[in-house]
Length: 121
Image 1 (cartoon, rainbow, N blue to C red):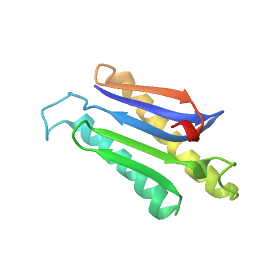
Image 2 (image 1 turned 90 degrees about the vertical axis):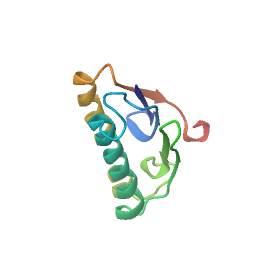
Image 3 (image 1 turned 135 degrees about the horizontal axis):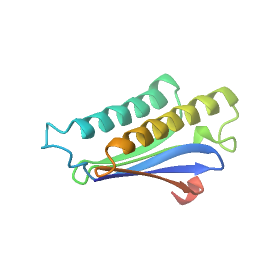
């Protein structure tokens, strides 16, 4: 099962952590894992390249682990309100898309939220 925890402060999503493989299909043929991976990379690339956001992330291929923190989503770290809105909006959209997937793939995907300061992530 893939477990994804989204980090937030108040109503603002600013990061996430992913663990594990879905187990929906065989390696290389798991469409759910492929969909999650594609969406994750879209978020990372959009934040880093398109939005030129200060984003930190790490990967661990062995355990299927990814961690992303985009402090630019939070007013404390970014004075540009448009950038804050865009960064938080993209991460929030990813959260809601994954929540939709859990309705059908609840045995393979778990999505939760965690209220936590970026300094503690």
